Length: 92
Image (cartoon, rainbow, N blue to C red; front, top):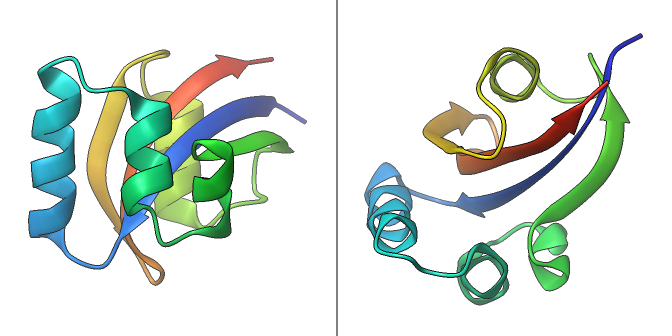
């Protein structure tokens, strides 16, 4: 079963996600922005979700992590939890 390590920032609206993504593209620090804006408990850890297996996350999230590029912020991605900005650190 493939595994990955990722971090994310979860917010309520696409607009919020777009604004945070713009800050990241201007050199903003993912860790600090996750701590400041993310509504997920992982925000306290800079958005880190640690390592998990394919299929552990909701489908839209899983697809980005296991099919998207590494070390690039992807999104906004909508799930039932809200809007995510996702960075896949590694896959194995």
